Amino acid sequence: MVPSSTQGPTTRERVDRVLNLIRPAVQSDGGDIEFVELTPDGVVRIRLHGACVGCPSSHITLQVGIERNLKAHVPEVRAVESVD
Image (cartoon, rainbow, N blue to C red; front, side):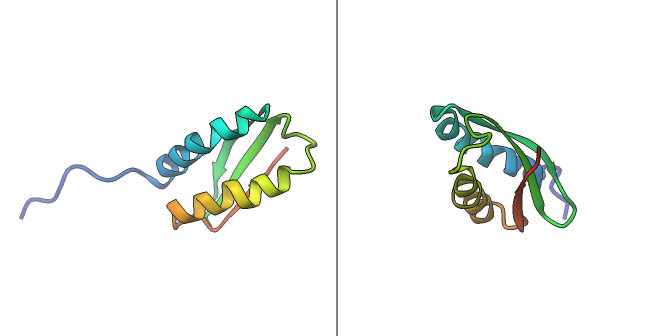
């Protein structure tokens, strides 16, 4: 049997795809999200921009909106952290 030469998307590509789906909602409130890195232990680090910086609801956006969606669609993601 010949092994398949096509592989599925990488974890990072899947993370990017989910973030790109979330981004318009964040941008509609005047903010933005930037993917910084995916650590070997499954932590996605993002940077918040615009209205998200200093917003009292940014923690909720991070945990409920971003982390929940990433964990649901990319099982390798263990957590999401915001970095400055």
